[in-house]
Figure: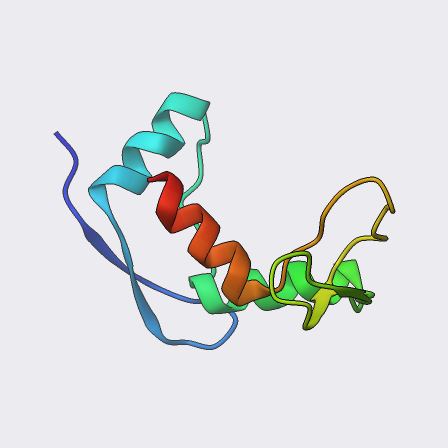
Length: 93
């Protein structure tokens, strides 16, 4: 039903693919217009509006190393560094 389309980003002028899956998603949500910007430009606009993210340091509950997290850690919940968190997720799958 849908086919991939090549569109031009109005921000940077580069070509990007509006995939059949994305078109179906847009149709399901009732969006009338095709995207105007490539993913990189959409992401940069979104991040510019949000402002810089604040990170907090905590001690990893698994390895004892320093973990930088984007939330204020609570003392009653364990916090894991990126490596230990990734290992835990893989072991669950």
